[in-house]
Image 1: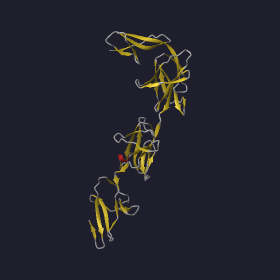
Image 2: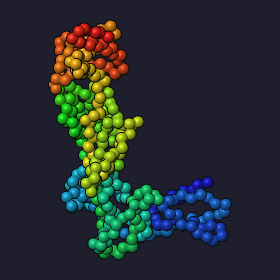
Image 3: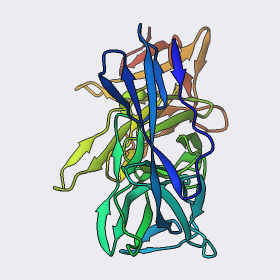
Image 4: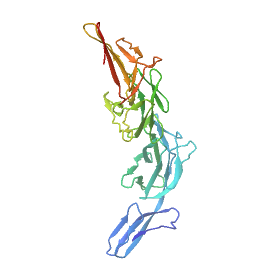
Length: 345
């Protein structure tokens, strides 16, 4: 059976100290950071040591910025001995009391994007760090022995969590990135190829802390599809080396390194429809193979010459290049033009 030791009616100026268990055989055990114990198979005497309270002064929460500790009203605060102190300009210091050896717990309340830089107390202007207990997952320290004339001050300092930029880029002049909350990627001819969205646990953002998970979602436009093998995410380390970032296509995420990241979308969106270009074919005797293409029973007879004048691109009757979906069955018809005859196959 688990028992709990509750303490009431403590005289002013005193505080409860150690809770000591004395077993039937005379052995003792001191409860550490708890007031609970499992009842053994014997008689137990519980004794609480009471101590004189000593004064400590808790100060407003501080924010570390530009190399100094200030009150920046970032929304950070901490709680100690039941009283909360924030980083606002009007927050005042307060005198608190605890007994020698009491375990003093400080609970920080970090605003989004901030963390604890350090906690410490000064005793007659001598600084002592306050540590974080991995065992109990909290900041704590034992109250030192003080004289009435001693001056003990508590300080808790917060700082911004370093964040790094995510930038969408294109190393292909024919691909343009339009920078907005939901980035649109388009071709040089102003045709939308798709859009890219960046998401973190904080929502849409282009600045992320190290080790944060970043969701990168690609939304191809009509006529395009995503080629995940062409997603290029990289960063440059402190030595100037370009490093690749692994993109998990299963859940559309990558882990943010401690550096700015670029996402190259040059080749991400591949067209699902493609043009057909017919190359000129000539024999040494001057004969020519005239190629035509079609689908089903339809043969396309309209063409436009390529920019280098070596091929003919299949068009509709208005002269716009036709695009065919991947997997479409194309029929190829050719005619051989000779001086003596004209053969069609």
